Amino acid sequence: MLNGIFPPLTTPFEQGEVAGHRLRQNVRQLNTTGLAGYVVLGSNGEAVSLSREEKLRVIETVKEEIPPDRLLIAGTGQESTAATIALTREAAHRGADMALVITPSFFASAMTPRALLEHYTAVAEASPIPILLYNVPKFTGVNIPPETVAQLAQHPHIVGIKSSSENLGYLGEIIHRVDEKFAVLVGTASVLFPGLCLGASGGIVALANIAPRECVEIFRLTRAGKWEAARRLQLQLIPVNRAVTAQFGVSGLKAAMDMRGYFGGAPRPPLLPLDEAHRKTLEDILRSAGLLEATPHNPLGR
Image 1 (cartoon, rainbow, N blue to C red):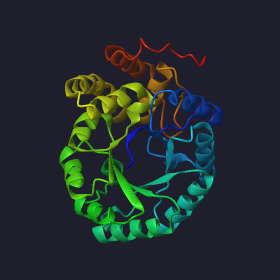
Image 2 (cartoon, rainbow, N blue to C red):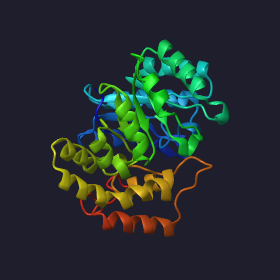
Image 3 (cartoon, rainbow, N blue to C red):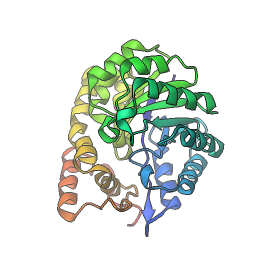
C-alpha cells in the first residue's frame, strides 16, 4: 500500500523560466531525508501556471534525480476528461509512477457524484499508471462525497486519495468506508498526526518541502506507537504549516525554502513574492519552531 511522506514539490523559476538545475538541487537535498517519494505539478508546484511542455520537463527532471525506490507522482488533472487522459498518458511516458488527478472545477456546480464517477472511471480505464484522487475543495469548490470515494475505491486502478482539508470527520469517514489497501493520504500537515491516528497511510504535505525530516519523524513515531512524542512534534509544527499554507501560501512556502537552505525563489506572476515585513514574520515563526538553527541559511549562495 502507498504510505509515507511525500512533498508536493515547488517549481523553481529564474527570470520567469523554470529553473531545472534548481529543481535538481532541491531533489538531491531532499533525497537524504527519508521521504517516500515526490509529487510534482500539484497546487504548490504552481501547475496552473505551467505550459504542457514545462510540466513534462518537470516530470523528466525529477525522475532523473530520484532513487529507484522512491515514487514519482504527477498531477495530471485537467478540466476535461479527454485532456486529463492525454496528460496522464504523457506523464507516464515521461516517468511518472502514479497520477494525482484533481477534480474538474470550472463548472463546479455540475460536478455531481455521477459526473465525478464517470470522469474518474474513464481516466482510470485509460491510464497506464495508477490514479490518486485529489480532493481540494478550498481551491476547486468541489468536494468528492465519501460515498463517491468509496465507489471509486473499488476500481483496481484507483489506489488512493489526497484529502487537502483539515476536516478530520471527512477523512475518518473515507477511511471507514474503504478497504485498507486504498491509500488515504493527509493533504495538510496541520492534521498529519491525528490523520495518521485515524488510519491514514501517509501524507502529501507542503511542510515536507521545508521540514522533511520532521514530517517523516511524525510518521515514524506514530507508526511506532510513540504517541506523545509525535503529538509534541505535531504541535510544534502547526504554526509553521499555517504560515506556509493558509497565511502566506506558495509565496511563503518558497520564502521558507530559501530560509531553510533549499531554493525557493519567486513564484510565477500573477503571484507575488513576500515583502520584507512578511518575510520577517515568517522568519520569526520558523525560528520559534526551531527550524532555523539546524540548517545554515542559504547554503546555495543566493
